[in-house]
Structure formats: C-alpha cells, structure tokens
Image 1 (cartoon, rainbow, N blue to C red):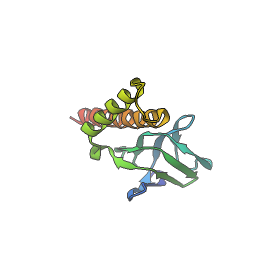
Image 2: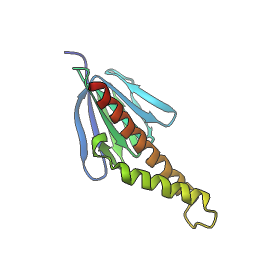
Image 3: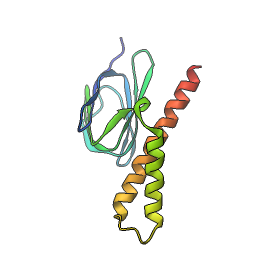
Image 4: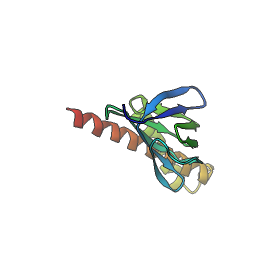
Amino acid sequence: MALTVHVNIVSAEEEIFSGSAKYITIPGEMGEIGILPNHSQLLTIAKPGQIKLIFDNNEEEIFYASGGILEVQPFSVTLLADSAARAEDLDEVAAIAAKEKAEQALTDRKSEIDYSAATAELARAMAQLKTIEALRKKLKSKH
C-alpha cells in the first residue's frame, strides 16, 4: 500500500469527499499546487477550478471548487470551499449561461452589476467548464 494523505473537501452545504489519495492537485493563489503525503504545512486561498485526486490504484477523480481555504498538514488536506461538486455533477448548460451573462455584464457599460462580481462569476464559470472538459477527456481515454 502506497503512502496516502486523508482528503476532506467540504462546501458550505455538505461534505463532498472524505477519503485517502496519494496525490492531489488544486488551484492556489500563486498557481496549481501539487500535494503528496508528508507535504509541509500550508494554509492558503484556493482559487476557482479543478481539483484532481489520484488514488492508490492510479484511478483519479475530478472535482470543482469555487474557491475557499486550503489547509495542508503532513497527512491531511482540507478544502473548505464556498461551493464544490464532483465534476460529473456540474451543470454545463448553467455554466455556459453564467459565463455568457458575466461576459455581457463586463461589456455592457450601462450595466449596474459590480465589475469585480462579474469578473469573479466569469472565473467561476470558466473553471467549471474547464473541469467538465477535463472529465470528458478522462472518460474518452478510458474508452
């Protein structure tokens, strides 16, 4: 059995995942973070995007998080996310609609929507769409 780290992905609504993985990638403030067992302690902000867990059997599972707080200990990783979901549970139609709405708000100078809110919404929608695309690639490679 390979060395693993316990991973908890929790959204404001529910626990999304709790289990062991041998490798985790997650988008951080300064770029993508790769986490192995015995990683040094870290507390940072997670950005919206794809989270990938690789298990002992080399299977992987993909998640989406809208951002949050990431705590890394040598044998545990906890992501407290604003919202999170398994990649297969994402709604592509809703993500495309949110992306289009945010893009329209950013180009419509008469819009009363807050620029930073529209930018954040666009980043979340784009991250969801990238996560959906990663899931599609993973499923194609299995066939």
